[in-house]
Image 1 (cartoon, helix red, strand yellow):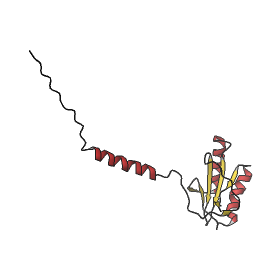
Image 2 (image 1 turned 90 degrees about the vertical axis):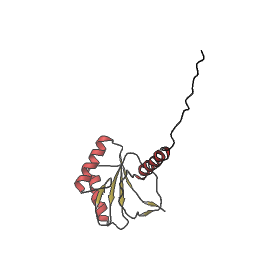
Image 3 (image 1 turned 120 degrees about the vertical axis):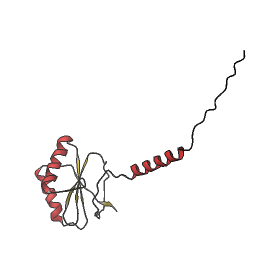
Image 4 (image 1 turned 180 degrees about the horizontal axis):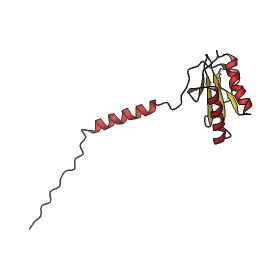
Length: 132
């Protein structure tokens, strides 16, 4: 008695592969467009000599031209900036404070932030300027 084995052909459906590729492309494009860092639109002052520092462990204080204060991109007041600096120092004492002010910001607005830093005796401070 002879057994006849029939081989079934193996078939991968390719109809939905284009749909999967299209959805994967959309997902990658959306993830690539996400900006995790909040920025305030300002015009940077120009500096003659700039030193580049690492972007890790930074606390960013933004000051717009009308004197509005932002802590890491979120609008806040001077008290919130003070508590944010204290919390940043408690979590990591080597946290660098970046002061990013618009070129047309009156100095009295920057001076308010510097007063807070002076009262807290915070010494790791950088002024962010546009490289000339």
